[in-house]
Image 1 (cartoon, one colour):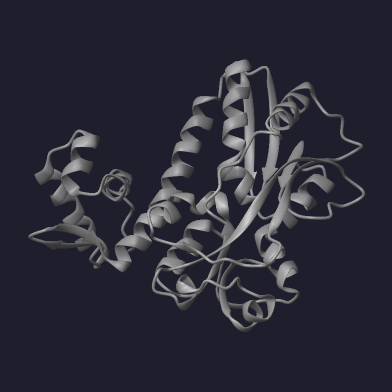
Image 2: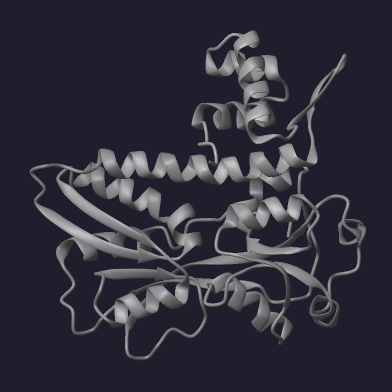
Length: 303
C-alpha cells in the first residue's frame, strides 16, 4: 500500500530549500534540529529515496530531493488554498458562486480575489472546479458553472468574455540541460525537434506553446499538473512549457533556467460567462475585482 504524504515533512523540506539549511528551517518552523533530521530520515525511509545529501559541510538536495520540493510547493499551495476556501464557508451563507478555472488561474490569481470576496461577504459559499481551459469552456457553455477563467487566445463567440490580464508561458530547463547554457534565442524549428514536458491536450499552456511553434510537440512527458511538469524538468526529462508565474521561485533559486526564445508565448487571462445565464451580484463583484487588478504590474523572471 502506498504510504500517505506527511504535510509537515513537506513543509520542512520546502523550508530547508528556502532557508538554506536544516538548522535554519527547523528554527523557522519552531522544531528542534534532531526532530527535523529524524523527520527527513523517516520520509526517506518511507519512500525509499534520498532527498538530502549530508556531509561535514552541511546538507544539499539530491536531484530526487529537488523534484520532491517542486511537487511539495504546489501541493502545499493547494492545501493552503483549500484551507482558506473551507474557512470561508458559512452555515448561514447568503449567496453562492460556482467557478471553473484553468490551473494557472486557480493557483496564481483566483485565490487573491476569492480572499477579497470573503472579506467583503463573510457568508459567501464559493465552489471552485479546477480543470483545463477546454473543459472550462464546456462547463460555461453547458451552464454548469456561473463563471469561468481561462488563458487562451480566441474565446468562443457564443460566450460572453472579457480579458482581465495577461500571462507568459516560459520555456524552462534543468541547469544541466544543453539549452541552459545557450545565448541565442530558441527558434521554432529547434523547438519542434525537441521532446518536451507538456500539459495534456486541452490545456491553455499546451495550446500556447504549440501555437507558437506551429506544430504538435513531441511529448517526453504529458501531465495534468504543474507540479509534475516542474518535477520532470528538474529531473532532466526535457524542456518544460509552463506559466512564468509558476516557476518564479525555482528560477530565482537557480533550480530551473529560463531559455531565451523568439517564440510569442504571451496569452490573455479571460473570464467567461454564458450570455443566457443571469450574472448574479456575486459574479459581477468577482469580475469587478479581476478588472480592477487588470492594470497591476506583473513580476518577471528575466524573460
